Length: 412
Image 1 (cartoon, helix red, strand yellow):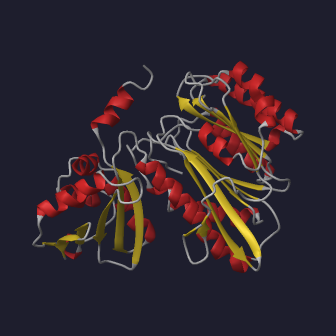
Image 2 (cartoon, rainbow, N blue to C red):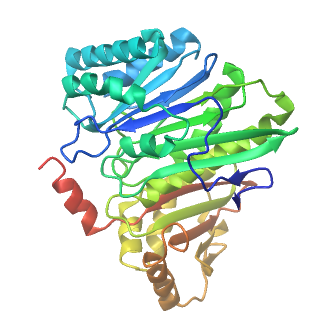
């Protein structure tokens, strides 16, 4: 175990998951690579589901149906079926039919109602699910359901991802062990507005729907909605959080919130770092803002700037791009109040140019470009607006020639 917070520790063995949840992940032949492409999460009876989905007006039918089922059931659902390979977006009535066929069949096999099943899809937009392959493999998927199949499920939702994205944390509250686990996918089309991004979180502490919705919303704002790889919002972006088990006293809600935040931010940073063709993670901390929302807006504007991202890739100490991106965020501040740092090197002090060594900044960025994955490959940028007491973070990555290569050949 590794210490994460005063209350929470990371569980190194990722298959030790929240009590009562079962996971599965298999290859159903939906991908030409024959890699795993079909996952299933089965939650205990009485589970509460909360979801946040893409705000794009061009949405996959699965997003609309999932949102509707969560609302109609007040969150009392049981399962999520996830396929990768085909996004099933912009596929018209056929996409709706495939969703209904798949959820009806998996519900029959699990002995639950069809309305208790959600389905999320990821892959190429405009391509329908290979429904016959999916349906014939559902019995195998159900047979694969196990407590310790967390990794298989996490693998089955990946597309262009280079790394697995999963995390489990635990704490003890009044002698009771509580676990929160999450897994995600995302590498390109990352600029969630709630990349192609899917993420799922499970927690074995029971919390009522209204409070759970608030917790999930808070966590998403500070994690998945604070990352950018390329400024593109997907048709299928979905995050679903599930809790189950004995109810926990509301006095401990702040501890649970912290655990949810840790899991979501860990997954979000993994998505940003795994940006297609990326070599480093960009972490922007904005301090001295009037509100947390303002701080996150400024940080996201910097992370989302193609000019900042290309400068980082080239190890170019072009700090003007950073301050320009901050100015384009929509947040009002006075340049004459701003402090700016790249790494430990100060560049601006109260808006005035500080005496600094540009080669030191270049060397700093270059060392991060060659650093170990999410250990010492993080380029830190700090900007203090000195106009308030709030702060916020956002994460991104460098923008490389490899990104262009990957996305110019995505369907070919």
